[in-house]
Image 1 (cartoon, rainbow over the protein chains, first blue to last red):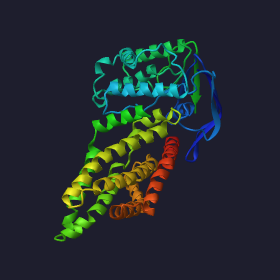
Image 2 (cartoon, helix red, strand yellow):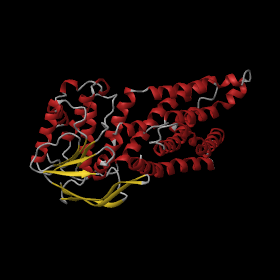
Image 3 (tube, helix red, strand yellow):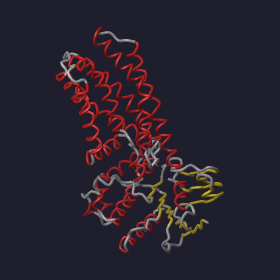
Image 4 (cartoon, rainbow over the protein chains, first blue to last red):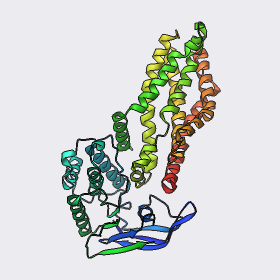
Length: 214
Length: 220
């Protein structure tokens, strides 16, 4: 399990301008980071740098992990859903579940959670995010909020220690926001970390840290 | 990799329009080319196998155009990139899926060609083996070009024309090898060249494609 994500003097240049400049950050277990900033200040880029989806132009991102545990313990939920609109919610979630299990196998890890079947895991995620009634509908038939919930449901399928959430509250109604906050609180209580960018008022949590990007 | 293959197969069969349109154009090319030769049926019969290889090329350039564009737009590639070697596996899954789909189609078309253009029946297998080897190289090359142009939103499809000049050596090798083998029952130097190109493309291009996809995610 990742105990700490360390960003050492991380900079990222897009075309000719520096989007992130010399940033140092430590994200530890059970910490809740709220990244704030205006549009274009580099919030999404920072989350992608933390997830190693983007490589920094300078500096380094280090995962300080327990050697016997999962190295790629990152779950990322971005602006884009990362799901196929022609497939059903169930088909999409099954693929994500297989993707996460494959990540675990590639790191020679035993699953951290109790060994339950894929069907049960997906069903639990569908029920937690209250999208079980849409499970067999193609994604393109759902509303923006329902699609977002399907995308967020993938978080609970993974055993990832670090959650990276880019504007997770976008398109969500109040009941869905409460489900998301509940999911984050549950994750933090299990020694997970959550880093999110949002224009919404942050979740009130004792471990909350705020990073303001200019 | 097989979970990617399953997912991509589901996606392909849920929205097969692109594949169907490409197949329809390929079949039309094969069936209608004798019209260009008017009454010279004998020449049409002689050229039929060469047109078969050309049709394979057209089919690939149409179907494999902008293969990763949708994956890039809907964020699938970002999820795949979280996994070590995920992008490489994604490309391999796409290669296997495309090769299998086109193999089924080429098998059907090879039989059709033999029946329509009065070719000896025993060439079906030889024709198919050569077309499938040629297809390995074409698909790998087309996926590489698709990876190269993934984040280009305007006229990205035109870049697939790059496939044409790079496929000419393999096309010549495939044709020469096919004609030599069907006439003498012996392998020619061109057979080795075709096998070499197919092997080299499988060994090299998926890695380069994965690297290009990574670059597109970084700067796209």
